[in-house]
Amino acid sequence: MSLRDSATLTLKEWQAPDAGQERLRLAYLDHLAAHPDGMWKACASGHVTASALVVDPARGRALLTLHRKLGMWLQMGGHCEPVDGTLAEAALREASEESGIASLRLLPGGPVRLDRHHTPCAWHLDVQYAALAPEGATEAISDESLDLRWYAYEEVGTVADESVVRLTRRTRELLGRRP
Image (cartoon, rainbow, N blue to C red; front, top):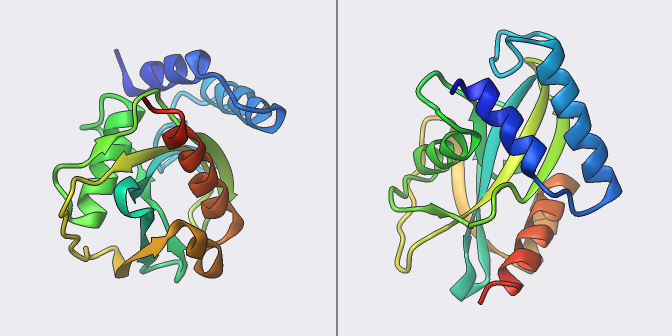
């Protein structure tokens, strides 16, 4: 199965938590149906990306990266690559590469939320996951980052934009439902 087909299946099966997220889910599916290259950076009208908020639930914190090109505190993530078989694999790869933490695992249940935003290269149709950091994880700054820093969940809004705040909030909701 191609990454595009896998992404389409993921989005078809994902249960949006609210009407706004449902509208985005349908828009992403329309985009993929209309653009055979809609998974790749070369698609100038926009492309699907994958990201993951790295969290340490035991300590109530999230790891954010100060993005080198955008100069903003964000979750880890970026463009899909040919080695990615699924959006989840892309999100986990990006989170591991950008955080330096090799033993991350995604929060079960699929994507946490969707976020569409404009970047210097094009519109990003971001499929956002949450990645759980193992106890005692040590982060390492990558070439794509100016800095990495852990923030208490409540502090995320003091440094990051509303998109990251919404992702953090939704991740916390899902963590609260885990057995």
